[in-house]
Length: 518
Image 1 (cartoon, helix red, strand yellow):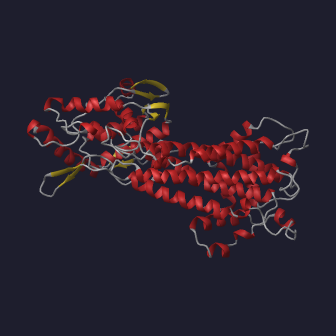
Image 2: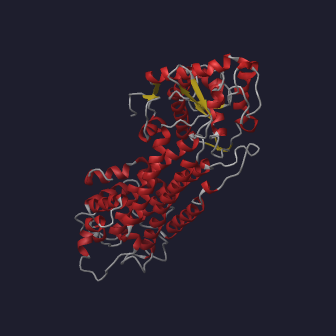
Image 3: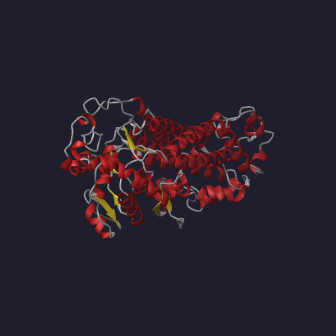
């Protein structure tokens, strides 16, 4: 059930707030204090617009855009200028974004405008809020932004719907923007001076996709710890490398968090007690170095989350309206729409998340390879040779890991000049965000493969029991996927375990034993 208290646009919001709105349907409303700021900044824009041809040239109000910034626009064409801007910039291509990602774009664009530096009327912000609350979802294609001058093309598809154009979904049906608004009891707006520009100048595409993906990636860090604990038990590994003393002499916070999780999950295990005196001195790195690898990913993702949290409450408009104490205003043109801060963070986030799958696949290899698995059957098959067991599950994970290596090439190192050279360096942060979202999907599938493989390994250690927390994870898996007694198609099993991961049910099951994991 989503929170009943509306989020107030124009007041600070968090990554958790964003997830509540996009995925759990939390309502939004305009912050009362924000309304006063909006009215004041709009008055500054109106003063320029009403001055007509005698007003000084101000970018985007009475001039063209980009390379046409020096082209003066006459007073009678100011409204047409905004309409033409939105229409001409709606050039998105590729598959459509999902509802959660579009809702993220909507709320973040509304948040920027509500902060009162954009010179946009309150009714524009209120229409965005009403669309969110009524679940009118604009169709936004996923490709077409270079991540500077803002995510122009994706945001233009959003702005089209506010004008009653473009396409949107309402109550599960695709229709024109105007039809969707009417069906929801809403009316389009006629964009006034600067409003079209204010709706498309910003980083909200990459911020929405990136924020949701980083939230997912941080949750997967905990899932990776659970998967690793299950694999360690299945392969008769040791928990000694996770000793708190070792963590304190190399005090990276992510490493400490992972080791703390592993210690909490590996308490009182019959399997571990059964091999306390075995001759094996050290486990493979994929088991022994989980705190160092998972922890490094966690630290990198936490930094990316900090960057995104700042961006959620940043003004990315251009020009930006600054009110003066004497009652006047300065409209400053700058580059806050440039996506480089996000592009770098999201590229790093993709690499960090990919490592969770990289090491996970190696743990799967430890379980299915009879030369490494401490007595488990080859490929965990019930009768090796006649049955192939988890042989190709490991291959599938390897495929996902390899794909991630391609996706982790940083988009932020590229730039292609646009707008006749005026926009001569761009961030490609939209590509960084899109790649990250795909990496997260691949990591989720890889971890699901490890979890179901480890559960099969635990079956083969019976009658010995693993720790209470690992047994709880095992039980959650067995509630949706039975033990492999003979070969069967495993794609349904993978999807079922992915469902446990995505819903958070697996982590919640473990935390019933351990308390909150980090």
